Length: 75
Image (tube, rainbow, N blue to C red; front, side, top):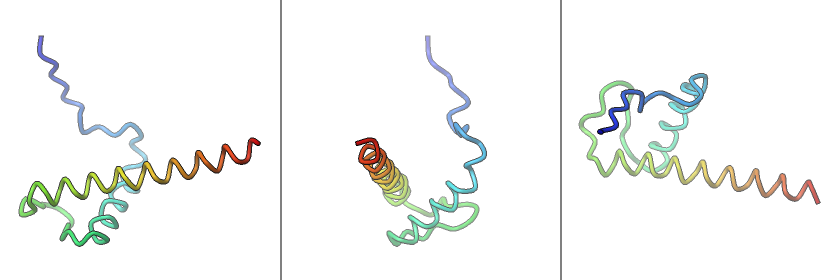
């Protein structure tokens, strides 16, 4: 049976939507992708993927820093 999940765009924490949007635009600006409010169909899939991938990379780095800081505080 096929998995037809219509909620793939739902945020785990809906209150974070504005912060994630702001972060997305900051990352796009940092890497030189011309992201704008509204329709971005003129971006290549590579550009859009690069923004998403770089966002994930930065979020993982931030979490690793926080975990390392928390570990140091426990010792």
